Image 1 (tube, rainbow, N blue to C red):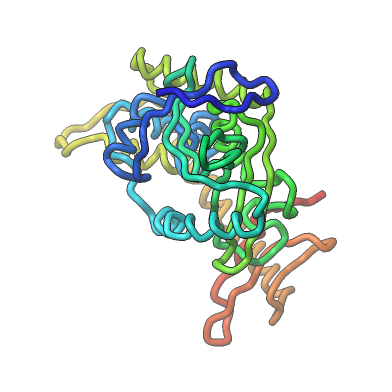
Image 2: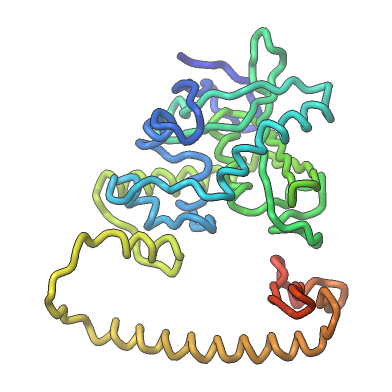
Length: 313
């Protein structure tokens, strides 16, 4: 089945293919995405995801490690999604908000899109004209919580922007509305417009990733936490044998341990100096920019959290 969409700037001529209607996280949903790259996965392919690395995604696609387990953040994001979308619809009565199936691109079947909602011309024909994504964020301290900039702009976390562009490129649309609920009480809206240059870069990266899957060429090991967790999960059991490793890898490992120890000591010293200067204050700022937030429990300092968007300029 093929759905026709309104053509946007640099949009493909043919509409995307509808793969079906699946509950996010269901077995069918995972199966539909197994042979392609979804919107939440393209950021990993591009090296932009805080949750997944190219290495870990590659191993999941090969069936060598289990699908990502649902976290508390993922669960609550799913729970809040209907309310966030409903709030967007209430604030924009001029727009028609509709549910969305799972799509694949007509010419690149491995390019998968599963938007939270679609903006359609009317419910009778349900021709999509834009995309709506609903997000949640924990940080309500202001100053661009978790990479969220001024409301109404396109300043959103880079991995979410990649997701938006992936959906727009798949569906041949030009506008993605992003509604976010921060700390359960602060609602904001953003707009991401189609960028042909970035979309092309993602297509090329996606095609190369799919090539490596077919060729069995695993990505290089990087420093992403998801990569390390994947490596830890791959061996099955333990053999009581010694394995000779290269001198270069031994030296790199020892050097990293020494550097980490020195960095941790410097971090404690720098944090101590900052806390001493803050005193009983809540936040440290410099030139009106956030530096860190001091949290208190039982009247005493519990932690010092650095600003999400650190800048010295």
